[in-house]
Image 1 (cartoon, rainbow, N blue to C red):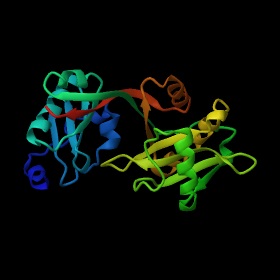
Image 2: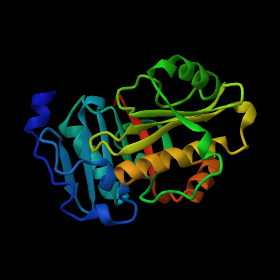
Image 3: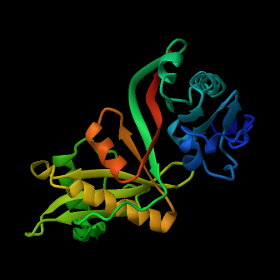
Image 4: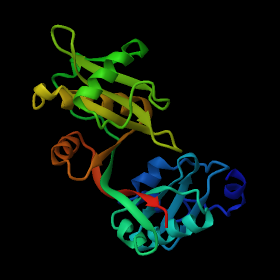
Length: 253
């Protein structure tokens, strides 16, 4: 696989200036500059795409028809190596005419360069270390079983949480990193199911955002497109909402 990837022509993902346009923040923050020597990339007709080789994942931004064309080109140039993709909304339907696209999920890639307004409960947030991994794992299993990232994940730089007066964990969240660029990515924010609606998630999200912006100049996150409550919270915190995406698997054709 490695030899195949290295033999492919690579593209300068930033040659078209797409990263400065609305809807292309995933390129701006998610693709490393300068280009990693072993990254395969494609650029054509108002879209760019690049390959996360270990995951077999193609990322693309730009005009949906062009992005679908680049993803299809990547699939044919790397036969058997590409298993999934993230692309502008609508690419799943376009690719479905040629490939076996499965389990599409609509997301919004959201980002901010600004610290959010202070939340009154941010003072309750504390950093959590390796000694708390078991506690975090149990909490996530109970209150957020579909969490994306768990304790001990290699890309996580920080876990944080909120406790009640008895010391019991009632909310948690983490900062991970986007593939390729390493930009900060907020993940696995969860609140005790019995205490939702009391602002714990908002306080934790605000604290993590402030932490990332102060140290890295930005914070990013993925929001499920149909999670309206989360969308309203992220908007209040200043997260931009310009990058509707779809992620899906490519099954046997």
